[in-house]
Image (cartoon, rainbow, N blue to C red; front, top):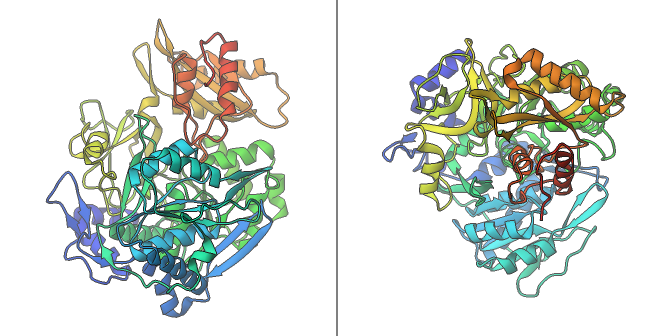
Length: 633
């Protein structure tokens, strides 16, 4: 079937469409119906089914005779380690840890926080929770103690599973002291902790509360899979909230299974046994969906990579992993490729590796600027597919269904809405806008299976955050447009559409222009306060390694480019050349924080920031331009 036929089938009969996709899942008891809409605008899918996620991700492959197939490849350039885990080994490891949790009183519905680096044991911990119906909440390893404490108090876990340390290029990050501080700060106290000791930093354990990973499993009975209801939370994943209080996105078990399994073939075009690599972290939604669950549910081999795109040891590490493990489909953030391009702009390191296994590269997490996509296409010679989704949805909202039908690529667009998503562009009054007009991106309810049904213990906040602004729609918080061919363009977060003398302008469009400058490796545009025009755009640019142009020449040329491509209406006159941009660990640029710094406003240090020192560098640069920028406390 063509994309248009499949999309129409899902739109015309969503219950029938998703019921057919559900047949690919092993059910203990199938749902009596697909969609439960009695409590609209709150919708649920496959609510009364009985099912187990771990069975579908691990055990059923073993039972089907594929126990010797590689489930996980662990590739860690920071420890010079490569190991492989078969589906049979993964089942046994998962059952053993799940049995240990059961023996210490963890039952279905209990929460377990996982605070681990990118090691196979993190995946085992997630699956062990799923095996017994515990609700895991993965917190990015090395997260600040105060932020971890907030999540402990919100999720109220019975147990915490942690690694003793994480490894960054050139340094060891000890997790256990952060964990101890977080538990001291938190009002809620877990009953026990399980600590995986890494030889790079062996942690001190607190007698009676902390148990070593291997010791706690010794002599226990391996756990069987515990069936849970379709609406049972598979996990809670915290995403930043506008109030500073994190939002606990809930993932429903049944819809999660059905949707993720569908995406592996239809979107990523991989078959069972193929090697799929998502270069992310288990602390983010990409890690949940496409390092852990989707590849395993579908019977693929997934890669757990502990390293960076550059510096571990060089800008060729991606190509080594793809070559060595025969990766067919590769998924990462545009910021990773921008880092590679900045260090190796000629792509010289690519020539050292055999990338013949690689068929498609997928990008998500940040807007994929045309310059980066064109560079990748030129150097790799494979389709570069941008796609767009959110923590809240758990998988693709708009993309190119490569396994269903490879649609023509329009650089700058993540292509078209996926089946189940009725994406519309609305004005401030909630009216549908004409093709090509910039507005708020909203999705008509109900959302498809696997998307968030609510926030953890915060239904009113869920309604207010997502369903109130445009009744009958899910508010994405992104701004963009849809062209005459139905292709979607994500231009900015709604907050990043700036108002310059009454003109609504997209900072994303300006970033595309700046990124096209041959000496610009990375860039960001923010709106800063201006007494005359309300807001003015301010561009930050980082230069390519080896660039020989002066900063003033680059600034002049960037201003001219924006004036030429977007026009004088943008009033683009401010460019700041900096060495690096402030980002989260997942690669998102902290634009809102940069706005606060430029406007001299107080701001909270973002919990997910990769390197806090960058903010002081931004402050210094802005003060040099005459802005009232202030340094962090």
